[in-house]
Picture (spheres, rainbow, N blue to C red):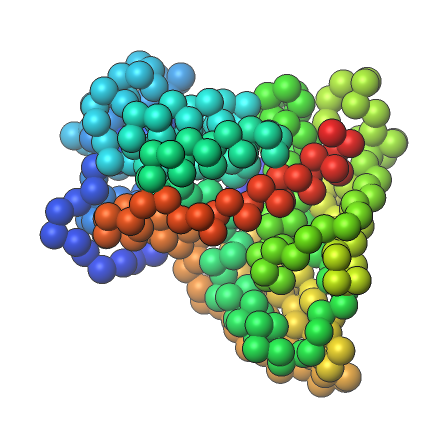
Length: 342
């Protein structure tokens, strides 16, 4: 499975590099590591992974980093921030442990498996007054930034409907993704979280009135009591202002391409749409549509994959504390709970 949160970006150098610890340095963890270390604003002082092979591989990016055996040892190394890319079931407890020690956290999505766990992490970050970042990378594509800005200034009038999709011709390559206790859920937790976040973030986190979902596993209705996780999902989300949204996501779909990724927002006087190019996980166009006319408003190339981590690094390196705006992510976690009937 190809993950989408890729490609480092360049940022202005700071005089004193931020010291980082990395918890979980499998393929995705090393991508995060490369992005955050790329421009010299940060340095890796310690690395921790359950796999000695993965920890050793990370040394190619940070030859001087110590390899430690546990989160406790990573915390003892006294980094300014810890980057977490471990299985989802571990995220909340690991983030809280680091924050309670006064260390900032950047975490791979999902931040936690449930809204209750998310709230606990937010509480710890607020009490520590340390920057908390979540790798919700699609917010940082130029296309979505442009769509959000144009919706915000009323370019298509009131948005009354939205349609968001993330269909993946591949499934995850790690067994824990298919264990609900470890992952928190299937394709909704892995891919749908991006769609729900994009919907709510773009529209400034409106209250959610209703959630209805249909979940499937291997072509049949998914039943949690039978074990496993869903691999296809459709959910309808009703917003308090009367707008409605549909999200659909899947693993191992016969998509005819690597992936189908898109987000379309329908307004009274036009629509704005993001779409991946030719099945790509990296390249996106954004369009303004009016009637039968289309205007391209963003297109490749766009090195967006490292921007979420670098935004967190900006806050950390400039001495910022907890940003209360991130608390709104709890709404996305609550929607996911409702999709799963929790």
